[in-house]
Image (tube, helix red, strand yellow):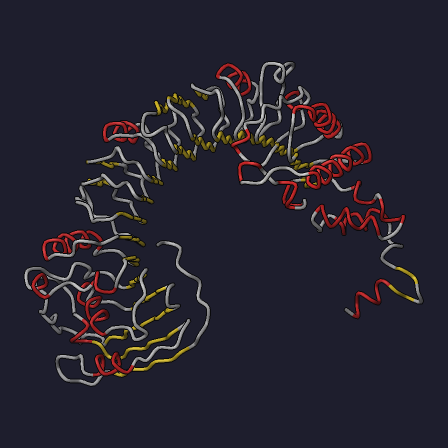
Length: 552
């Protein structure tokens, strides 16, 4: 505060206002546009300074909330709202004739009506007259308004524009007159009215496009992407559609996301074809109507694939994933998958979320995963179900770090009747994180810890997280080094392990978010060794705020 006073006042002189305009404009560039404009009330020397800023953000987030009032949310535009909007439009009228330079612009026009078209056209034309390089335009509040504002041709005939984002507007033949976008690298269309022919014409004139986003474009029934030799990233998302055809030919494409939502009560479907996308490394499908054969042929055409994300793909049943370079695999809420055969020797990261475990046969070399995350919603917990769960867990026995998310503590306590017929499935896991979604007692149950150590008898660290009760507990288990020539304990023959009950030496517990009484755990560990040796035990409450693991 003292430094600010010294900067502003020196014998009554405002030193900040006496700085040269380029320096003060540079200072303003670090402020949000809303605050930069407000500095105009300080004095005459500040009044028009913000017009020298090369980056302006006039989106609705910087405006009074009443500007975004929408009848679809139960409120109608009243006189006060209309007055505020008109004041904002008048401000834009003055602003675009006063701006001295402009490189990047984000413009939101609330409450758009056809009568505003000429004014919006004028604002857009003025902006592009300043050699604009990046432009984002949004009209209206959301997708429900279905605004048909036709872009002026200046937008799509700019040789300088490199990044273009359009939300709630229309691209028609008049918008495409004299189209020329040789510098465009990024294009995003969201809730845009555009026909198949207009889209084809638009993309044909974006030869240097590297990143393309198409989100629910109305009137579009067939999307064909070809001739874009520099395209590296694409995201295609659709809602409320019945029939969609998508064909992509992009030899340089590296990352592709394909999402479908609300396909008219499952009546709609998507024809999806990739042609010559041999360099694709990451593919994400959300809600896609891909069946087992579709996925099989798709993966066969993607020899460079390293990441595969399948979310809510309910047409999959018995999938076969064979990919020699695959490193990262996610199967999230594909609820009808019963079996996933995986042949991926380089797989390092696996994430699974569903109501039940599935059959997971592994062909070829068994991958040694660095991390796996399993999210389960358990219901019918019979012996047969637990036997299936143990078999599923066994596929992750070579995982370095395993994250398991379940509803209740008892979900991971395998009954003795099942333990007698099988062996611990996670014998090679050293680091285990468990998230419990439901509330449980303040004291962490001893039976729960014992159950985890049966599942993984060689654990070095255990982390237990429960957001409901603000519990975050970390256990570190230190073992004795086996003597040279000493045989394995033999508890789980033929597993080549030395289990914790024969070698545990010290246990340290840290409660990081909430105090916990660890007396019962202390008694359990101190007397846990089979040979009767006392185990050292320590516990502390640090009450720090650890960063929650994002895997679950």
